[in-house]
Amino acid sequence: MRDHRKLRAFVLADELVIQIYQLTQNFPKDEIYGLTSQMRKAAVSVPSNIVEGCAREGEVEYLRFLEIAFGSLRELHYQLSLAKRMGYCEYALFLTADEKCEETGKVLAALIRSIRQG
Image (cartoon, helix red, strand yellow):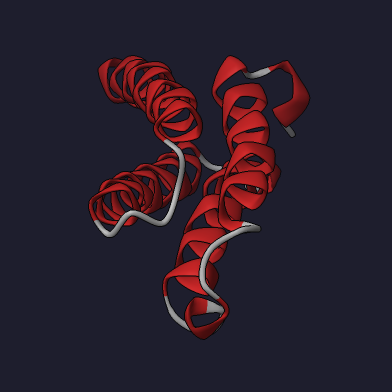
């Protein structure tokens, strides 16, 4: 079994969750079941799928969960962009989260590539 806490992709994704929760805390109340909920679910999905993948025995399953995490990250990145365009968040908070999304994506993509190349 792999230790997810040793993966840079997990550490970054975990930090991103905190940022997204802080960023969405001042979204309009009528978005609580909309964009707020969607962004939080997508954000939590990233490190959760990394953790679940690390708990799997086989490389194929591990890779599959990392790919799911990457998909959730891309979903979150779009939602973050939408939130900015809707005027729901301060530019500084958006920029910080956007940079963390980009960095997490690069690290996670590199991990996926390395596993595929075996």
